[in-house]
Length: 169
Image (cartoon, rainbow, N blue to C red; front, side, top):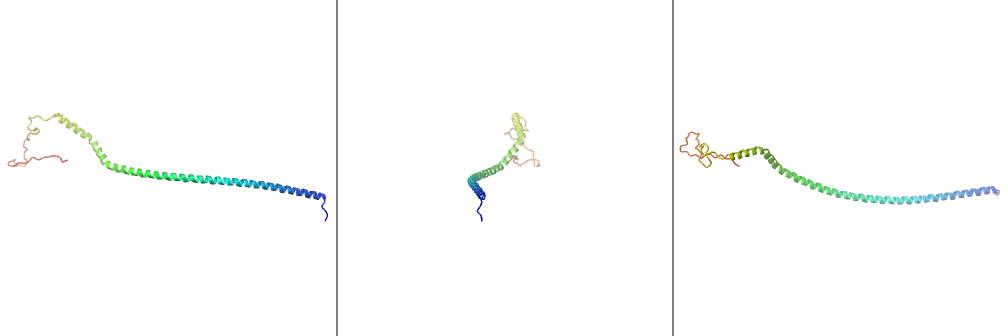
């Protein structure tokens, strides 16, 4: 084997220098990529931490809102029960007042005839009593003429009590 020629040595040295440069370049790129990966990993870790904090905050807000809605639901249910009780009381009162309302409606329907009757009675009072000379119409407090007996007895020896007619209240 012969010694390498100087041209081959220069070519080999140039090749080694190019390989060395390429290796250094690749190491630099690897370091840069590792730095980028570390930076991305740190950003992802911070982002993950932020997401976890936001998720925790959302979870707490959700729990607070659920608690508030449950409280509102309880309050609303109590209000509903109270209103239902009030409706039942009013229904009971309406049931008690309906007969009275029907009575008042009946009174209102009869008001006009009753007013006419009262006006007629007032007119009768205004006319005053009958004159005293009419034997068929005795004045109050005077004895009335005898009534004829329709039984044919003639009324001899029989004293009957006059019949009393009236109204019951």
